[in-house]
Image (cartoon, rainbow, N blue to C red):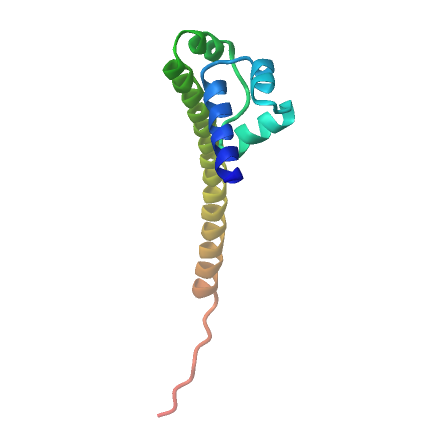
Length: 121
């Protein structure tokens, strides 16, 4: 039963944060320390960083605050994927260069001096 109460408290903390409540107000209202608050947010996949636009959106509408948070999260994902894409492109180029060098070496070996075999009649 205590687990359900703790889970509900965490959901309430997250809802309050998404609704734009001040961190200090959330700490007081739910009796949690700042590190606990941020731990809850991170564990639930919420990056505990508010931008001015998120706070402004939250003051008018909780749905807008959630959307602002989602947009920020997706912007971070896009940047991460772009970094991965660039790293993959570099690896691909390196592998293509290595393959070209190996093919060149293989071609040189096949096209090098040939030994003539004597055939016995």
